[in-house]
Image (cartoon, rainbow, N blue to C red):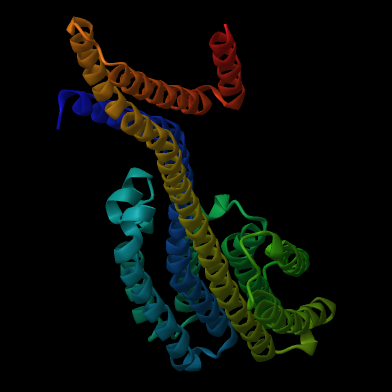
Length: 447
């Protein structure tokens, strides 16, 4: 390869390199935007996964609340001699649910700060599951030997204390898992049900059963005060159920606008809500009967109605929690799909830009290569022609024929040079510039 051809090849490569550098520079913002989009989706996915962790811990804790409420209801509605056997089933439920909560907590404690150290830093050391399990073991042991009204009252007090602690842990997990800050309308109102309304409803059911049992047993210190308290708790219970129904309605209405429609949300939740409202209506009728005339209702009947409503509450809550998981998983899937699309389209844009740059680069470098092919022989011919003209000028008898050949060769070379220059002008400055050069060349030739 001659020095001249090496220089031309280096220049051609330099043009291609510069074109691809330009493409790379303009592709850089695409890459930055793709990164920012992916970075924006990542924390939203992590937040939804954290909410799922919080919901997974609340599931066994809610069963603990139900078991404690059922234990209290059973204790207040049974004869002292039969209480131990009647308490066996709800006691087993609380024990199993606390064990399940402890097992879940080993997996999510680091994220939710629900281990002993994390709770201690938040001044909630008493809410550690180890502490709750220890308290429950004492209560479970006491439930097997209830024989006096004093022991019954002490056990009820223990149930109430543990119920309040578990309820507080549910609220704490709702805060640390960001469930309370859920950003989507459909899941937000479902969180309102699972995290706030339902635990309060379970409390109202337990409170009405406690007050009703006092009125039915005739152990109330002030019947008028207890009747007022029962009426108030009944109203609060009704308001909670109405709130749950309203939240469900909002969840159904907002479902389509948030990350796709859940196929199971409305059919399953509607059925569970109807069963729950039916049990609530029967229970409300019993409470009204107690307020009208306590003699019309027996403690066993109240206990049965309260247990039915608590069971319907738990069934409805578990359905709601499962559907909440479904909505959160839909959100995660939507964000992951959007993140993949953002990265995919960005990569496609860069690939297309590279292909276009290659095509444009070829459209520039190919004419330059053609120019080199046209000019290189002419340059050699020019050198030879000059040598031959010099030889002819030194000859005493120059040949007219030889001079004519040299002139023809030079004219041919000049034509090639003009064509190459016009082609280069067309590619560099456009067709208008090439036409102008043709006109100027024609004028110079005439002159």
